[in-house]
Image 1 (cartoon, rainbow, N blue to C red):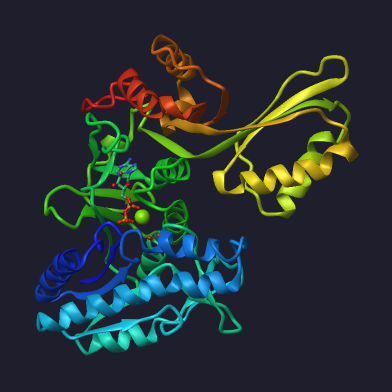
Image 2: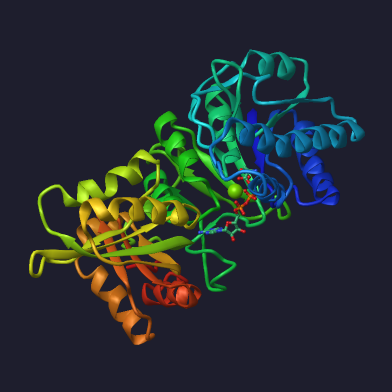
Length: 416
Ligand code: ADP
Ligand code: ASP
Ligand code: MG
């Protein structure tokens, strides 16, 4: 079989852990499989590099930031290839540009356009293990680009699609995808299989076990992902692009549940803009400069107008709060709105489930559970398959547990 295995920062935390990763890769290789390994930077390294750059510059999307961040993965591929060679396995490391992971030129969140798999196939044909740096690519002009936080997941899925791998295994410190973050809720239950659609929603809403864009890519290119633990042979969860992906697999588990999981995102800041003159185009005028600055505005609530004025509240990622404030300050004289308040001690807690589409009353149950637990909901947003609530960050973990309990997600057959 041709297998892509991805090991993230949580698996590459120390030299000892890299040794464990090498043992696992060597075992897979010894079984006769062709193995491509995609790795992330060692745990904490990308954060360290971002902080370092932040001391000299406040440009998050600069070309030079990508040159800097890509070094984390360069260290990892070399160390893993060395560890594999020590174990008698021929291994060769590749940077993003060497396997030509061609991307657009959007530094910090580049999109993969093509992968030239020829050098990978050459190595695999010789029986070598290929070790590829995740998270990075190269644009048409030869500039190094990075794919956004958690982007090694995307590199792995894209590599699996490019070499038509039989399996794409994503390894981390948890043995699969749970009904919620097992580090927050001890009652979280492992999900054997989940649809790409639901996983995409969970990932977008903060379940960082998979990067959202990697799931999007898997859905588009029909790659089945299996999430496993680096440190434990048992377990595993499948993310399936469509119901027919795995022959003979009982798909009953995908049906029936109304709520599949709970996610939370603590990287959230809430803005409230008061006394906005209520006229056509006001909301557009307010959000235009934010959009021009690529600020990701999320939950938006507008109150009904009173005396010709209304209030707008919305959330942005914490890292964009300062810039948002600057842009609003600049806009105030022109638009004539009132005070702008910011609260960056908030979090977004969400329930996700494809079954919500056909089931009324889910929101009510969630609100009742939050109410009974004394958790105040500040903002709400819903779609067909999710309900998100913005709460004070003090309540994040409690809210996750309360919602998990409210839908009995700890029980097999729960979520109904
Ligand atoms: P890596 O560094 O290997 O990429 P991550 O830290 O990005 O690993 O992802 C693994 C972490 O995801 C787990 O430690 C867990 O805390 C978190 N997580 C959040 N939501 C979930 C979930 N629903 N199921 C499993 N893990 C989750
Ligand atoms: N090292 C990068 C990050 O920390 C990519 C990844 O871990 O997937 O975001
Ligand atoms: Mg990750």
